[in-house]
Image 1: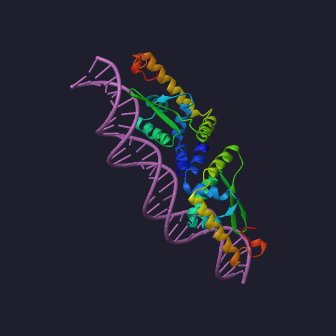
Image 2: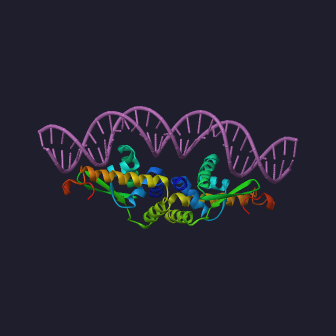
Amino acid sequence: MEELTTIFKALSDETRLRIIKLLEQGERCVCDITAALDMVQPKVSFHLSALKEAEVIRDRKQGKWIHYSLNEKDLFRRMLILSVCERMQDGTLSSGDRKRLDAFLGNKEQSGKVVALKPKSRCCG
Amino acid sequence: MEELTTIFKALSDETRLRIIKLLEQGERCVCDITAALDMVQPKVSFHLSALKEAEVIRDRKQGKWIHYSLNEKDLFRRMLILSVCERMQDGTLSSGDRKRLDAFLGNKEQSGKVVALKPKSRCCG
DNA sequence: TCCATATATAAATTATTCTTTATATATTAG
DNA sequence: CTAATATATAAAGAATAATTTATATATGGA
């Protein structure tokens, strides 16, 4: 019962649904998500932790970065994630998120600040 | 997006999940639900209105009573309701609710206060 | 008409959750 | 070792949601 309410509570917030929609395309580190949503980082961490607590997402540490991805471990969560993504297809919000993410990733590459470093220190590689 | 968060928010509360589980067996009036959950009536009305707002339940007025039932209008809500009921099968809480409901309905019948009245004034019939 | 019952709504309080700002921790580069 | 970066956590404040108590509305029966 508590697990159920925890899952539903995790899904009952707009920011968190936007994060799920972002992660539909694959894992992302916190700074990518922060840029995509255009929010301050502690706020993003707060919402990530709610989703992780509910085991809707999971994380993977790699060097300085923590990569978050959708947790497809059970059918129920998969179904919920699919439903959410399906229902957010043409939303203004999530398309804006995608745009900002792409711009952010583009800048990274261009400036060579992160992506052009040695493999070990790359965020997305 | 707002509809989604409204639905998930409605499901993110223990009391409301208990109500859903109760309604699995069929429609119930507010006083039945109040007795089953052993709560004060305005509290129950508050939670019913959250579920109704999310269109997870609907109501039907009949005389003095308002009967609430699960709203099976779309596949998504059906799926959520089924998942909730399935995951609450052997819970202590919901079995206690069932017991109190049965006791309450039994008393009604015995005392003849409600159930034995003329058809028009019966709550459950 | 008057009373009792079923339910909703409002107002006040309490509890939870979200947001912000500041700071701590860990990792890597230099 | 020091500085910089990525992320988490803590503390304070703001916003929401839940609970309680009191009252309003509607319906049916006497």
